[in-house]
Length: 274
Image (cartoon, rainbow, N blue to C red; front, side, top):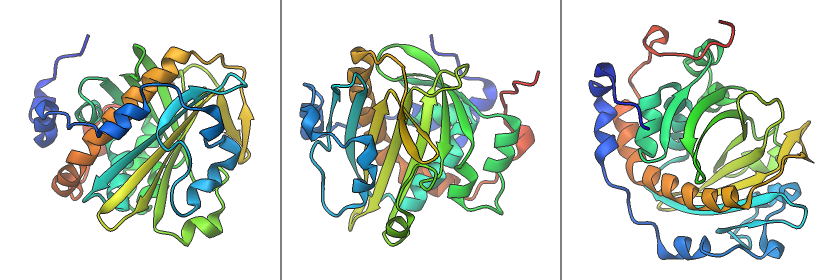
């Protein structure tokens, strides 16, 4: 059940986005998620630096269970009018307040919080946008396609995720890299990379999820997490929906809110020390 909005949330300028419609998802994206992808066409997690190659890879859209039992989801979202900075700003901004998380995907996003220590870092304007996000976590409650669940999403730098940084910094790209899993488990269940590159029209976002993996010391490590095929298929439906919605509204949300300074005392946090 979705929590009713508070009076404070109802007064926020961006509450208006809750009721705006979802855009249509391109047919080629919908078609790509109808049936499992051929495992031979996936980008293996060990080859994630291939995202830096020019052009496209096999299986840019699709999902499957791999022979080792791990899961894979790939999604491609064209984002006209969106810049790399807008995407970086979004991942600093939206996770620190539940309403911001909800306007992204009102049907499936319910709550979001960060810890006090991580909130201080997110609000530290002496750091770049990407630095403010690295080594912080969002604690969220959402439905990623197979029912609502609580998740910890722990963001890391592209370097920590093993990207070839000489190639990375030489291109107009950015990458949102993270582990996700239940808040009370030390070992993550999923690795994801939202890799964005600049295009003449804006950016294109090439998302990759590897379920049953984690990154340790820049190396991909298979975990013993048993991957549910229903969750993989559900994520294949969820990811295109949330990111095509974000593509439509992010330029306006960014323009209206990028210069509004947040105050620590105005935001709720989740404090595990209490």
